[in-house]
Length: 534
Image (tube, rainbow, N blue to C red):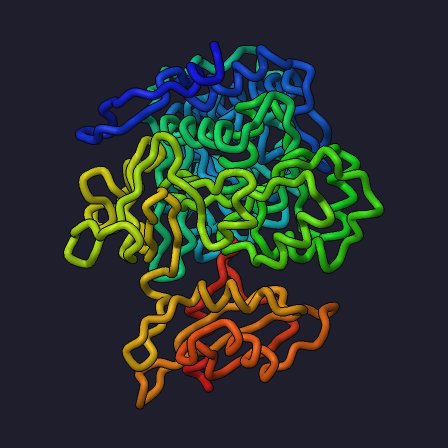
Protein backbone atom coordinates (compact mmCIF):
# COMPACT_ATOMS: atom_id res chain seq x y z
CA UNK A 1 0.00 0.00 0.00
CA UNK A 2 1.40 3.40 -0.96
CA UNK A 3 1.95 6.12 1.64
CA UNK A 4 -0.99 8.11 0.30
CA UNK A 5 -3.32 5.08 0.39
CA UNK A 6 -2.09 4.17 3.87
CA UNK A 7 -3.55 7.42 5.24
CA UNK A 8 -6.71 7.49 3.10
CA UNK A 9 -9.77 8.71 5.01
CA UNK A 10 -13.52 8.33 5.03
CA UNK A 11 -16.40 9.45 7.25
CA UNK A 12 -17.76 6.94 9.76
CA UNK A 13 -20.33 6.90 12.56
CA UNK A 14 -18.94 6.25 16.04
CA UNK A 15 -19.87 6.63 19.71
CA UNK A 16 -23.56 6.83 18.96
CA UNK A 17 -24.34 9.81 16.76
CA UNK A 18 -20.86 11.17 16.02
CA UNK A 19 -19.89 11.43 12.35
CA UNK A 20 -16.11 11.68 12.13
CA UNK A 21 -13.40 11.41 9.51
CA UNK A 22 -11.34 8.24 10.06
CA UNK A 23 -8.36 6.52 8.53
CA UNK A 24 -9.83 3.87 6.26
CA UNK A 25 -6.97 1.38 6.67
CA UNK A 26 -6.10 0.94 10.34
CA UNK A 27 -5.46 -1.72 12.97
CA UNK A 28 -8.55 -2.73 14.87
CA UNK A 29 -7.02 -2.30 18.32
CA UNK A 30 -3.85 -1.50 20.24
CA UNK A 31 -3.24 -5.26 20.44
CA UNK A 32 -3.58 -5.57 16.65
CA UNK A 33 -1.12 -2.69 16.17
CA UNK A 34 1.47 -4.38 18.40
CA UNK A 35 1.01 -7.77 16.75
CA UNK A 36 1.56 -6.26 13.30
CA UNK A 37 4.85 -4.77 14.51
CA UNK A 38 5.77 -8.13 16.04
CA UNK A 39 5.17 -9.80 12.70
CA UNK A 40 7.33 -7.27 10.85
CA UNK A 41 10.27 -7.11 13.24
CA UNK A 42 10.30 -9.85 15.92
CA UNK A 43 13.99 -9.32 16.71
CA UNK A 44 13.92 -5.52 16.85
CA UNK A 45 14.53 -3.82 20.18
CA UNK A 46 11.16 -3.13 21.78
CA UNK A 47 12.01 -2.03 25.35
CA UNK A 48 15.26 -0.79 26.88
CA UNK A 49 15.28 0.07 30.58
CA UNK A 50 16.94 -0.65 33.90
CA UNK A 51 14.70 -3.69 34.05
CA UNK A 52 16.27 -5.20 30.95
CA UNK A 53 16.35 -5.15 27.16
CA UNK A 54 13.54 -6.89 25.29
CA UNK A 55 13.06 -7.70 21.62
CA UNK A 56 9.53 -7.68 20.22
CA UNK A 57 9.41 -11.46 20.53
CA UNK A 58 10.62 -11.37 24.14
CA UNK A 59 8.17 -8.59 25.06
CA UNK A 60 5.28 -10.46 23.43
CA UNK A 61 6.17 -13.69 25.25
CA UNK A 62 6.37 -11.89 28.61
CA UNK A 63 3.05 -10.13 27.98
CA UNK A 64 1.44 -13.48 27.10
CA UNK A 65 2.58 -14.96 30.41
CA UNK A 66 1.38 -11.97 32.43
CA UNK A 67 -2.01 -11.98 30.69
CA UNK A 68 -2.45 -15.72 31.30
CA UNK A 69 -1.49 -15.42 34.96
CA UNK A 70 -3.94 -12.54 35.45
CA UNK A 71 -6.66 -14.59 33.73
CA UNK A 72 -6.00 -17.54 36.03
CA UNK A 73 -6.59 -15.22 38.99
CA UNK A 74 -9.97 -14.17 37.64
CA UNK A 75 -9.10 -10.92 35.84
CA UNK A 76 -11.32 -10.70 32.76
CA UNK A 77 -11.81 -8.56 29.70
CA UNK A 78 -13.18 -5.17 30.75
CA UNK A 79 -11.75 -5.35 34.27
CA UNK A 80 -9.60 -2.41 35.36
CA UNK A 81 -5.95 -3.07 36.20
CA UNK A 82 -4.07 -0.15 37.76
CA UNK A 83 -0.38 0.48 37.05
CA UNK A 84 1.40 2.40 39.80
CA UNK A 85 4.80 2.03 38.19
CA UNK A 86 7.71 4.26 37.25
CA UNK A 87 9.36 4.39 33.85
CA UNK A 88 10.69 0.85 33.58
CA UNK A 89 10.11 -2.38 31.67
CA UNK A 90 7.31 -3.71 33.96
CA UNK A 91 5.10 -0.78 32.98
CA UNK A 92 5.31 -1.57 29.26
CA UNK A 93 5.07 -5.35 29.70
CA UNK A 94 2.01 -4.95 31.94
CA UNK A 95 0.40 -2.51 29.51
CA UNK A 96 0.80 -5.04 26.69
CA UNK A 97 -0.51 -7.86 28.88
CA UNK A 98 -3.63 -5.89 29.80
CA UNK A 99 -4.29 -5.21 26.11
CA UNK A 100 -3.77 -8.92 25.38
CA UNK A 101 -6.38 -9.79 28.01
CA UNK A 102 -8.87 -7.22 26.74
CA UNK A 103 -8.86 -5.53 30.16
CA UNK A 104 -8.53 -1.80 30.82
CA UNK A 105 -5.22 -0.30 31.97
CA UNK A 106 -5.37 2.51 34.54
CA UNK A 107 -1.89 4.11 34.73
CA UNK A 108 -1.36 6.21 37.86
CA UNK A 109 1.54 8.60 38.34
CA UNK A 110 3.93 7.48 41.08
CA UNK A 111 4.01 11.07 42.37
CA UNK A 112 0.34 10.78 43.28
CA UNK A 113 -0.35 10.55 47.01
CA UNK A 114 -2.40 8.15 49.10
CA UNK A 115 -5.71 10.06 48.97
CA UNK A 116 -5.53 10.54 45.21
CA UNK A 117 -4.56 6.92 44.59
CA UNK A 118 -7.37 5.73 46.83
CA UNK A 119 -9.90 7.84 44.95
CA UNK A 120 -8.73 6.60 41.53
CA UNK A 121 -8.64 2.91 42.48
CA UNK A 122 -12.02 3.17 44.15
CA UNK A 123 -13.68 5.20 41.42
CA UNK A 124 -12.69 2.84 38.60
CA UNK A 125 -13.18 -0.21 40.86
CA UNK A 126 -9.78 -1.60 39.95
CA UNK A 127 -9.63 -5.38 40.30
CA UNK A 128 -5.83 -5.55 40.40
CA UNK A 129 -2.88 -3.23 40.84
CA UNK A 130 0.71 -3.70 39.73
CA UNK A 131 2.98 -1.33 41.64
CA UNK A 132 6.55 -0.60 42.60
CA UNK A 133 7.51 -1.74 46.10
CA UNK A 134 7.98 1.84 47.29
CA UNK A 135 4.38 2.63 46.31
CA UNK A 136 2.54 -0.15 48.15
CA UNK A 137 2.22 1.87 51.36
CA UNK A 138 0.11 4.43 49.46
CA UNK A 139 -2.58 1.85 48.67
CA UNK A 140 -5.42 1.50 51.17
CA UNK A 141 -6.52 -1.83 52.56
CA UNK A 142 -9.47 -4.04 51.55
CA UNK A 143 -11.89 -2.16 53.80
CA UNK A 144 -11.46 1.00 51.67
CA UNK A 145 -10.92 -0.81 48.35
CA UNK A 146 -13.15 -3.93 48.41
CA UNK A 147 -12.96 -4.44 44.61
CA UNK A 148 -9.14 -4.63 44.65
CA UNK A 149 -8.59 -8.39 44.74
CA UNK A 150 -4.93 -8.59 43.66
CA UNK A 151 -1.75 -6.62 44.38
CA UNK A 152 1.46 -7.39 42.50
CA UNK A 153 4.71 -5.84 43.70
CA UNK A 154 7.75 -5.03 41.55
CA UNK A 155 10.98 -5.33 43.56
CA UNK A 156 11.31 -5.47 47.33
CA UNK A 157 9.04 -7.24 49.79
CA UNK A 158 5.66 -8.22 48.37
CA UNK A 159 4.06 -8.03 51.82
CA UNK A 160 0.38 -8.95 51.55
CA UNK A 161 0.59 -9.05 47.76
CA UNK A 162 2.35 -11.23 45.21
CA UNK A 163 5.73 -10.57 43.59
CA UNK A 164 5.55 -9.36 40.00
CA UNK A 165 7.78 -12.28 39.07
CA UNK A 166 4.85 -14.60 39.76
CA UNK A 167 3.11 -13.10 36.73
CA UNK A 168 6.09 -14.02 34.55
CA UNK A 169 5.98 -17.73 35.46
CA UNK A 170 4.86 -20.30 32.88
CA UNK A 171 1.04 -20.31 33.15
CA UNK A 172 0.51 -23.67 31.47
CA UNK A 173 -2.14 -22.33 29.11
CA UNK A 174 -2.73 -19.06 27.27
CA UNK A 175 -5.29 -16.45 28.16
CA UNK A 176 -8.46 -16.51 26.05
CA UNK A 177 -8.40 -14.29 22.97
CA UNK A 178 -10.36 -11.09 23.66
CA UNK A 179 -13.30 -10.13 21.45
CA UNK A 180 -12.28 -6.51 21.03
CA UNK A 181 -14.41 -3.74 19.56
CA UNK A 182 -12.50 -0.64 18.58
CA UNK A 183 -14.91 1.50 20.60
CA UNK A 184 -14.03 -0.45 23.75
CA UNK A 185 -12.05 1.43 26.39
CA UNK A 186 -8.38 0.42 26.39
CA UNK A 187 -6.96 2.87 28.96
CA UNK A 188 -8.39 5.17 31.61
CA UNK A 189 -6.22 8.18 32.42
CA UNK A 190 -7.25 10.35 35.34
CA UNK A 191 -6.87 14.07 34.71
CA UNK A 192 -4.61 16.04 36.99
CA UNK A 193 -7.43 17.33 39.15
CA UNK A 194 -6.15 20.88 39.69
CA UNK A 195 -9.75 21.75 40.63
CA UNK A 196 -11.97 19.17 42.32
CA UNK A 197 -11.68 15.43 41.90
CA UNK A 198 -9.84 14.04 38.86
CA UNK A 199 -11.91 12.68 36.00
CA UNK A 200 -11.25 9.29 34.42
CA UNK A 201 -10.79 9.86 30.69
CA UNK A 202 -11.76 6.79 28.65
CA UNK A 203 -9.29 6.24 25.80
CA UNK A 204 -10.71 3.71 23.37
CA UNK A 205 -8.84 1.59 20.83
CA UNK A 206 -10.32 3.82 18.09
CA UNK A 207 -8.99 6.95 19.84
CA UNK A 208 -5.53 5.50 20.37
CA UNK A 209 -5.08 4.04 16.88
CA UNK A 210 -5.89 7.39 15.29
CA UNK A 211 -3.44 9.13 17.60
CA UNK A 212 -0.68 6.66 16.70
CA UNK A 213 -1.37 7.13 13.00
CA UNK A 214 -1.49 10.92 13.33
CA UNK A 215 1.94 10.89 14.96
CA UNK A 216 3.23 8.47 12.33
CA UNK A 217 1.95 10.68 9.52
CA UNK A 218 2.78 14.13 10.84
CA UNK A 219 6.23 13.22 12.18
CA UNK A 220 7.12 11.01 9.17
CA UNK A 221 7.91 8.07 11.47
CA UNK A 222 9.29 4.88 9.94
CA UNK A 223 9.83 1.39 11.26
CA UNK A 224 12.71 1.12 13.71
CA UNK A 225 12.49 4.56 15.35
CA UNK A 226 14.04 4.82 18.81
CA UNK A 227 12.51 7.13 21.42
CA UNK A 228 13.79 8.16 24.83
CA UNK A 229 10.97 8.42 27.39
CA UNK A 230 11.61 10.86 30.23
CA UNK A 231 8.09 12.17 30.83
CA UNK A 232 5.91 9.89 33.01
CA UNK A 233 4.77 6.73 31.25
CA UNK A 234 1.46 7.22 33.05
CA UNK A 235 0.77 10.50 31.20
CA UNK A 236 -0.97 10.62 27.81
CA UNK A 237 2.30 11.82 26.24
CA UNK A 238 4.24 8.93 27.72
CA UNK A 239 1.79 6.14 27.02
CA UNK A 240 0.40 7.31 23.66
CA UNK A 241 2.91 9.69 22.05
CA UNK A 242 5.92 7.56 22.94
CA UNK A 243 5.25 3.98 24.08
CA UNK A 244 2.34 2.99 21.84
CA UNK A 245 3.50 5.15 18.92
CA UNK A 246 6.90 3.47 18.94
CA UNK A 247 5.26 0.06 19.01
CA UNK A 248 2.99 1.04 16.14
CA UNK A 249 6.10 1.58 13.99
CA UNK A 250 8.05 -1.42 15.31
CA UNK A 251 10.28 1.02 17.18
CA UNK A 252 12.04 0.96 20.52
CA UNK A 253 11.23 2.87 23.70
CA UNK A 254 14.11 3.59 26.08
CA UNK A 255 12.71 4.37 29.52
CA UNK A 256 14.36 6.66 32.09
CA UNK A 257 12.95 7.01 35.62
CA UNK A 258 14.23 10.54 36.28
CA UNK A 259 15.30 13.34 33.97
CA UNK A 260 18.87 14.57 34.25
CA UNK A 261 20.01 16.69 31.32
CA UNK A 262 23.61 15.48 31.08
CA UNK A 263 22.67 11.81 31.56
CA UNK A 264 19.82 12.19 29.06
CA UNK A 265 22.12 13.49 26.31
CA UNK A 266 24.69 10.76 26.93
CA UNK A 267 22.02 8.04 26.82
CA UNK A 268 20.48 9.51 23.66
CA UNK A 269 23.83 9.21 21.92
CA UNK A 270 24.53 5.72 23.25
CA UNK A 271 21.13 4.32 22.20
CA UNK A 272 21.07 6.17 18.85
CA UNK A 273 17.82 7.91 19.73
CA UNK A 274 15.85 9.28 16.76
CA UNK A 275 12.78 10.69 18.52
CA UNK A 276 11.83 12.49 21.73
CA UNK A 277 8.68 14.05 23.11
CA UNK A 278 9.32 16.41 26.04
CA UNK A 279 8.25 19.70 27.56
CA UNK A 280 10.22 22.78 26.41
CA UNK A 281 11.87 23.21 29.83
CA UNK A 282 13.65 19.86 29.34
CA UNK A 283 15.18 20.98 26.03
CA UNK A 284 16.21 24.22 27.71
CA UNK A 285 17.88 22.34 30.57
CA UNK A 286 19.79 20.23 28.04
CA UNK A 287 21.19 23.42 26.55
CA UNK A 288 22.08 24.81 29.98
CA UNK A 289 23.53 21.70 31.61
CA UNK A 290 24.84 19.37 28.88
CA UNK A 291 27.48 19.65 26.19
CA UNK A 292 26.11 18.37 22.88
CA UNK A 293 29.54 18.55 21.26
CA UNK A 294 30.78 15.69 23.44
CA UNK A 295 28.31 13.21 21.94
CA UNK A 296 27.27 11.84 18.56
CA UNK A 297 23.61 12.87 18.30
CA UNK A 298 23.38 12.59 14.53
CA UNK A 299 20.53 10.04 14.75
CA UNK A 300 18.28 12.42 16.71
CA UNK A 301 16.04 14.02 14.08
CA UNK A 302 12.60 14.52 15.74
CA UNK A 303 12.11 16.67 18.82
CA UNK A 304 8.44 16.70 19.74
CA UNK A 305 7.27 19.14 22.39
CA UNK A 306 4.06 20.37 23.95
CA UNK A 307 2.47 21.61 27.13
CA UNK A 308 3.97 25.08 26.69
CA UNK A 309 5.40 27.21 23.85
CA UNK A 310 9.02 26.65 22.89
CA UNK A 311 10.95 29.88 23.50
CA UNK A 312 12.37 31.31 20.30
CA UNK A 313 15.83 31.50 21.85
CA UNK A 314 15.68 27.77 22.66
CA UNK A 315 14.65 26.99 19.09
CA UNK A 316 17.56 29.04 17.75
CA UNK A 317 20.11 27.44 20.06
CA UNK A 318 18.93 23.92 19.31
CA UNK A 319 19.07 24.60 15.57
CA UNK A 320 22.61 25.94 15.95
CA UNK A 321 23.86 22.94 17.91
CA UNK A 322 21.67 20.20 16.37
CA UNK A 323 20.88 21.33 12.82
CA UNK A 324 19.37 17.94 11.88
CA UNK A 325 16.82 18.05 14.74
CA UNK A 326 13.31 18.98 13.60
CA UNK A 327 11.30 20.57 16.41
CA UNK A 328 7.62 19.65 16.16
CA UNK A 329 5.01 21.22 18.43
CA UNK A 330 1.99 19.04 19.22
CA UNK A 331 -1.02 20.44 21.06
CA UNK A 332 -3.67 18.29 22.64
CA UNK A 333 -5.09 16.94 25.87
CA UNK A 334 -5.93 13.67 27.54
CA UNK A 335 -9.50 14.09 26.24
CA UNK A 336 -8.22 14.26 22.65
CA UNK A 337 -5.79 11.37 23.22
CA UNK A 338 -3.31 14.04 22.09
CA UNK A 339 -2.55 15.47 19.55
CA UNK A 340 -5.15 17.82 18.09
CA UNK A 341 -2.70 19.95 16.10
CA UNK A 342 0.88 19.43 14.97
CA UNK A 343 3.26 22.13 13.78
CA UNK A 344 4.73 20.95 10.46
CA UNK A 345 8.48 20.22 10.52
CA UNK A 346 10.49 23.34 9.84
CA UNK A 347 7.74 25.73 10.98
CA UNK A 348 8.96 26.06 14.59
CA UNK A 349 11.40 28.82 13.64
CA UNK A 350 9.01 31.10 11.72
CA UNK A 351 5.75 30.16 13.49
CA UNK A 352 6.89 29.86 17.13
CA UNK A 353 3.58 31.20 18.44
CA UNK A 354 1.50 28.54 16.67
CA UNK A 355 0.73 24.98 17.76
CA UNK A 356 0.33 24.00 14.12
CA UNK A 357 -2.47 22.80 11.91
CA UNK A 358 -5.24 20.36 12.76
CA UNK A 359 -4.45 16.65 12.36
CA UNK A 360 -5.86 14.87 9.32
CA UNK A 361 -8.94 13.37 10.97
CA UNK A 362 -9.58 16.17 13.46
CA UNK A 363 -11.52 19.40 13.48
CA UNK A 364 -11.16 22.54 15.60
CA UNK A 365 -13.84 25.21 15.86
CA UNK A 366 -13.31 28.54 17.65
CA UNK A 367 -16.48 29.45 19.55
CA UNK A 368 -17.65 32.45 21.57
CA UNK A 369 -19.45 32.30 24.94
CA UNK A 370 -22.82 32.11 23.18
CA UNK A 371 -21.79 28.98 21.25
CA UNK A 372 -21.23 30.78 17.92
CA UNK A 373 -18.21 30.27 15.67
CA UNK A 374 -16.01 33.35 15.38
CA UNK A 375 -14.23 34.60 12.23
CA UNK A 376 -10.69 33.53 11.35
CA UNK A 377 -8.10 35.22 13.55
CA UNK A 378 -10.48 36.04 16.39
CA UNK A 379 -10.14 34.42 19.80
CA UNK A 380 -12.62 32.05 21.40
CA UNK A 381 -12.84 28.68 23.10
CA UNK A 382 -11.44 25.77 21.11
CA UNK A 383 -14.00 23.01 20.49
CA UNK A 384 -12.39 19.82 19.18
CA UNK A 385 -13.87 16.83 17.36
CA UNK A 386 -12.60 13.74 15.54
CA UNK A 387 -11.99 10.02 16.12
CA UNK A 388 -9.27 10.81 18.65
CA UNK A 389 -11.74 12.65 20.93
CA UNK A 390 -12.78 10.30 23.73
CA UNK A 391 -16.41 9.29 24.25
CA UNK A 392 -16.37 10.74 27.76
CA UNK A 393 -15.40 10.24 31.39
CA UNK A 394 -15.69 7.05 33.39
CA UNK A 395 -18.82 7.08 35.56
CA UNK A 396 -19.25 10.85 35.39
CA UNK A 397 -22.44 11.82 33.56
CA UNK A 398 -22.38 15.38 34.89
CA UNK A 399 -18.92 16.13 33.44
CA UNK A 400 -19.85 14.43 30.17
CA UNK A 401 -22.87 16.68 29.77
CA UNK A 402 -20.88 19.79 30.67
CA UNK A 403 -17.78 19.24 28.53
CA UNK A 404 -19.01 17.41 25.42
CA UNK A 405 -21.34 19.06 22.90
CA UNK A 406 -22.50 17.28 19.71
CA UNK A 407 -19.34 15.20 19.54
CA UNK A 408 -17.07 18.16 20.32
CA UNK A 409 -14.97 18.44 23.47
CA UNK A 410 -14.97 21.92 24.97
CA UNK A 411 -11.28 22.37 25.74
CA UNK A 412 -11.44 25.38 28.05
CA UNK A 413 -8.54 26.83 26.04
CA UNK A 414 -8.79 30.29 24.50
CA UNK A 415 -7.28 30.28 21.03
CA UNK A 416 -7.66 31.30 17.42
CA UNK A 417 -7.24 29.87 13.93
CA UNK A 418 -5.98 32.00 11.06
CA UNK A 419 -7.00 31.87 7.40
CA UNK A 420 -4.21 29.38 6.67
CA UNK A 421 -5.40 26.96 9.32
CA UNK A 422 -2.68 27.65 11.90
CA UNK A 423 -3.99 27.38 15.45
CA UNK A 424 -2.75 29.51 18.33
CA UNK A 425 -3.51 28.83 21.98
CA UNK A 426 -3.59 32.01 24.02
CA UNK A 427 -4.55 30.80 27.49
CA UNK A 428 -6.73 28.66 29.68
CA UNK A 429 -10.02 30.42 30.39
CA UNK A 430 -9.33 30.37 34.11
CA UNK A 431 -5.74 31.63 33.71
CA UNK A 432 -6.53 34.79 31.74
CA UNK A 433 -5.67 37.98 33.64
CA UNK A 434 -8.04 40.97 33.49
CA UNK A 435 -6.04 44.09 34.39
CA UNK A 436 -8.25 47.17 34.44
CA UNK A 437 -10.46 45.80 31.66
CA UNK A 438 -7.60 44.54 29.48
CA UNK A 439 -7.47 40.78 28.90
CA UNK A 440 -3.91 39.50 29.20
CA UNK A 441 -2.99 35.98 28.14
CA UNK A 442 -0.53 34.49 30.61
CA UNK A 443 1.04 32.29 27.93
CA UNK A 444 2.16 35.41 26.00
CA UNK A 445 4.03 36.67 29.04
CA UNK A 446 5.50 33.25 29.84
CA UNK A 447 6.65 32.68 26.26
CA UNK A 448 8.48 36.01 26.30
CA UNK A 449 10.05 35.80 29.74
CA UNK A 450 11.59 32.34 29.24
CA UNK A 451 13.61 33.92 26.44
CA UNK A 452 15.50 35.97 29.03
CA UNK A 453 18.92 34.46 29.84
CA UNK A 454 18.91 32.39 32.99
CA UNK A 455 15.15 31.85 33.19
CA UNK A 456 14.40 28.12 33.31
CA UNK A 457 10.61 28.36 33.68
CA UNK A 458 7.99 30.88 34.72
CA UNK A 459 4.29 31.24 35.39
CA UNK A 460 2.05 34.31 35.22
CA UNK A 461 -0.93 34.54 37.57
CA UNK A 462 -3.42 37.19 38.56
CA UNK A 463 -2.94 39.00 41.87
CA UNK A 464 -6.15 40.62 43.18
CA UNK A 465 -6.07 44.41 43.24
CA UNK A 466 -8.73 46.74 44.72
CA UNK A 467 -8.35 49.31 41.93
CA UNK A 468 -7.61 47.39 38.72
CA UNK A 469 -9.29 44.16 39.73
CA UNK A 470 -6.21 42.11 38.94
CA UNK A 471 -2.50 42.77 38.50
CA UNK A 472 0.21 40.59 36.97
CA UNK A 473 2.43 38.47 39.20
CA UNK A 474 5.24 36.44 37.63
CA UNK A 475 6.89 33.49 39.38
CA UNK A 476 10.33 32.70 37.92
CA UNK A 477 12.55 29.70 38.56
CA UNK A 478 16.14 30.46 37.55
CA UNK A 479 17.67 27.21 38.76
CA UNK A 480 20.68 26.81 40.99
CA UNK A 481 23.18 26.70 38.13
CA UNK A 482 21.71 29.54 36.06
CA UNK A 483 22.98 33.12 36.00
CA UNK A 484 21.44 35.53 38.48
CA UNK A 485 18.16 37.04 37.32
CA UNK A 486 16.99 40.48 38.53
CA UNK A 487 13.34 41.52 38.62
CA UNK A 488 14.07 45.01 37.26
CA UNK A 489 15.87 43.43 34.29
CA UNK A 490 12.84 41.25 33.62
CA UNK A 491 10.54 44.28 33.67
CA UNK A 492 12.80 46.20 31.27
CA UNK A 493 12.90 43.17 29.00
CA UNK A 494 9.09 43.00 28.98
CA UNK A 495 8.82 46.74 28.34
CA UNK A 496 10.88 46.34 25.17
CA UNK A 497 8.45 43.80 23.73
CA UNK A 498 5.00 44.30 25.27
CA UNK A 499 2.32 46.93 25.66
CA UNK A 500 2.65 48.85 28.90
CA UNK A 501 -0.41 47.24 30.52
CA UNK A 502 1.21 43.80 30.06
CA UNK A 503 4.38 44.59 32.01
CA UNK A 504 4.48 42.54 35.23
CA UNK A 505 3.55 44.36 38.41
CA UNK A 506 5.19 41.85 40.73
CA UNK A 507 7.92 39.23 40.29
CA UNK A 508 8.92 36.40 42.60
CA UNK A 509 12.34 34.84 41.93
CA UNK A 510 13.22 31.37 43.19
CA UNK A 511 15.87 28.71 42.60
CA UNK A 512 13.52 25.80 43.23
CA UNK A 513 11.25 24.51 40.43
CA UNK A 514 7.67 25.72 40.13
CA UNK A 515 5.08 23.49 41.83
CA UNK A 516 3.72 20.78 39.55
CA UNK A 517 1.05 18.15 39.89
CA UNK A 518 1.56 14.43 39.35
CA UNK A 519 1.26 14.90 35.57
CA UNK A 520 3.89 17.63 35.41
CA UNK A 521 1.61 20.65 34.92
CA UNK A 522 2.38 23.86 36.82
CA UNK A 523 -0.16 24.24 39.63
CA UNK A 524 -1.13 27.88 39.28
CA UNK A 525 -3.77 27.49 41.98
CA UNK A 526 -0.95 26.83 44.45
CA UNK A 527 0.84 29.98 43.30
CA UNK A 528 -2.35 31.99 43.80
CA UNK A 529 -2.67 30.53 47.29
CA UNK A 530 0.85 31.76 48.05
CA UNK A 531 -0.23 35.26 47.07
CA UNK A 532 -3.41 35.16 49.15
CA UNK A 533 -1.35 33.96 52.13
CA UNK A 534 0.89 37.00 51.78
